[in-house]
Image 1 (cartoon, rainbow, N blue to C red):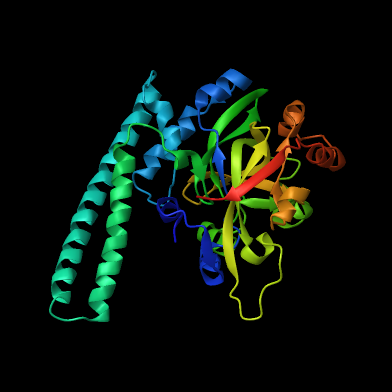
Image 2: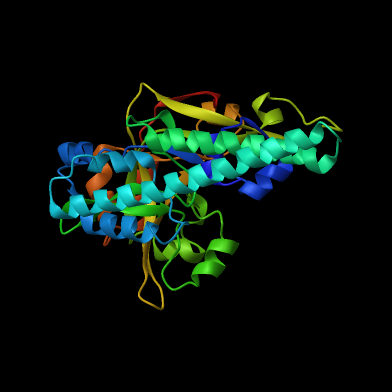
Length: 345
């Protein structure tokens, strides 16, 4: 199941096999995407050149996933580059709309033909056609409604692994907002090999940051992402605080964690700039995770993101020359809201 399909049908319960297919820790988050907020709160500079390039490349590369909420920053473009980005968005949406309409027609025809054929004979193949066509029709209709809706939707700002998000770094003493993929690919690795073999590098486990590839980034390339809430997969029996039954299949539930009192969380991140053999560039990042607070552990999850205190941001984003003990102290000196949780809708 792709990330987009998960957005179309945000199921709460998965079998163990399905989780493995999706990658075992499908963490996601509701991120801040409004550029005005970054500018107003931090005096941040928006790296429009990187956003323009990303939107332009998306027209040819279907693997590039950008939350719809980011598009809303360009509804009323003011500068030439913003107008260029708006043009890329409109062109992409037109392509998506055409593909959805064609797909919808194909599946409706498939459903009609299978339904008629079932009137004279019943076969598993025809029943499967009805089931698959019905599901895909719902997906295409949802996607078309999404494309045609002028207003933001609840999940428009939700990111998953391999999806892009606005991430803040420090350049020349200024906060700079850049689009980065939520799955870190370090400089110098083979792109396809890395993305296939290291599917979990959207999170950087704190206890491994001075090992393997993370040690090249910790203390050198730091960032933060503004998040409102986050989601985690937990085992159903852990969530219910009981042992797994002897013949019970291992299943999963998705929990939505909300900080209380409600406030933006400035999540500590590591990032890198990957350059391909043809000079292709990818900016990507990972959220740092550590031991969970008591209420998250009690809900059945063994990891948690780390929200930085705002007074530590400048030092965190300028780690060169700061010893590792001091950097770790910033991660220890984190914001500590209480995380309420509920089953995801």
